[in-house]
Length: 496
Ligand code: SF4
Image 1: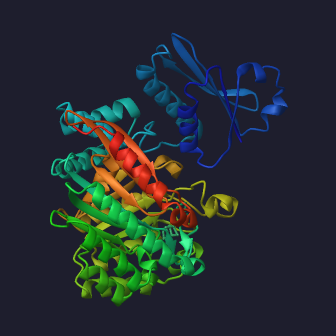
Image 2: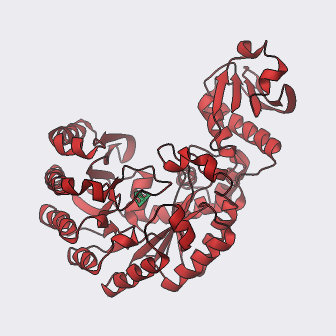
Image 3: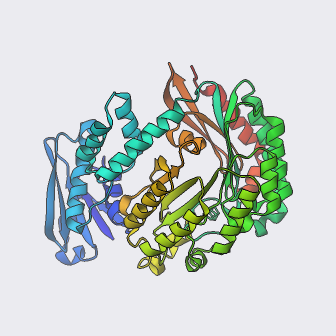
């Protein structure tokens, strides 16, 4: 347990996030200085350390104490009421203080909460060149050169995709299938075991089809440019159920402007020749087969009921079915894995030669089993994750890929990132458009979130989220409400 003492809680979220970047699963308690003034030294012994932030109008003092003794201190200069200027200074000062205390350097430095590409894109829009943007990251956030260059290069690549769509007339479609063969240890999504939900899948598909027809009606004069069927694992459906959904898409939407049609075929144990043929026949252009690791032992540990051989089989079947754009997802920092395990996974992937590779850093999310069982795994997870990310980055480059999208999540150990690499021309445009929130995404299915851009004079001024209920039974029973929410969302937004 860590104690955060502060005389003003305006920046509590920033300080918590910074502490969590160094101590991802430690609990943080807060107090005001008056509460701890009479604490005896023994009480401080309950906490691994105490971070005190005393805000003042000219400069604010930060200090770290262990058992009542001050170990390190720092200042954040400027008036803390001037949030716009002060916030980054406070984050940088607290980052440097924690870095000094732990002896750890985080590759993104004090940059938390904000998408790195957003900063790089803002630089591009102001006419800055690559070196100036990299310099900005290094000065304001203590970001390493490699990560600053990564964010900047991704922004250049994203810009090409963003500039190729029209935010007024174009939109994307997401279809959520919230079922999976089994639940992965680290999963925080609404992913229901398909075996237990078998009797409900038919009703789910019927409900989804009604929602898709409504989305098509709402967008009757617009151009659908990208479809993403995700989840869950869409291929957990039977071939005929999957075909039913995809047939509905073909019949409900005008696909003449479609540039990309992805189906997440994440779990190799759910992929069959018949399903691949169904996907192909309904126009799917891109699939994702996600090993996460090619090490059998790790697959068992993380609760995936397939072998590395299943992954290779599924990949070969997909090639035979004619898929020329296949992505693979991997995770760095899985339980028991070391850099040599990552190297092995990369060797195996290199042999298969996918067109894109998405490299995730293990995140310990609140809703995941891993969080509950953290004590059992803490010694074996995230061992040298930054080194594994480095190895994956180099291997992606070796395979002719370039980074094209990038995002970070809360509770990634080491404050690392997830990066999509692709052979130029094989990028997933949906991933970029959803990440950068540049185009409407209409989403169907339980837990799916529609994002509607509000635009004035060509600039996004606000993004409205229209959420579907997560629970499968409720989704089936409350479809009218979901449709009404969408209608209200569309009626209430500004698009000009
Ligand atoms: S395959 Fe994905 S959605 Fe399904 S349980 Fe695993 S992490 Fe969750």
